[in-house]
Amino acid sequence: MFYRPDEGHGLPHNPFGAVVAPRPIGWISTRGADGSENLAPYSFFNAVAYVPPQVMFASTSAKPDRDGTKDSVANIAETGVFCVNIVEYAAREAMNATSGPWPREVDEFDHAGLARVACETIACARVAGAPAALECRLTRIVDLPGEANKVVFGEVTGVHLRDDCLREGRFDITAFRPLARCGYRDYALVREVFELKRPGE
Image (cartoon, rainbow, N blue to C red; front, side):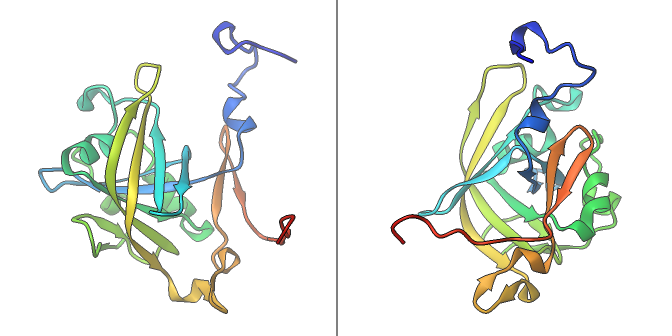
């Protein structure tokens, strides 16, 4: 099968999200200028640089009460900070509960029954007990083609690692079983890892 995206795929559901998979999930916590807090998962998320450490996530839809974007991006534009919380399998239901198109006044931490704790380097909350959390300062928001497509880039200013995820000096993802997005309503669970030595190492 071949299709041109601008002509449609002819399938019952868009296959694009399932092709680029699995994708890590950035559970983005933000605080607005008015002090309101928001928590939402984004599967267009990744690390993009080591030195200084930097991450990105993309928002691809809008809410009527946010003028062409969503709560996360609007809050980050106001305050210049955000936190990426890493999602483990044990938090799958809570993560899903925070994914709804809730009104801006809804606090997703409360809605999902999640405890929060203050970040160290930025004025923002993070998910208490997450396997890892990356405190970030905004570097830029890039508008992409399309009605509400925006990419947020941030520099990591603080890193939280849960103690039980540190094994023999390494952050071990098998200690918490990270969750990944696979398109449609499908998710993946990382159960096994293996090593490959790069040529020349």
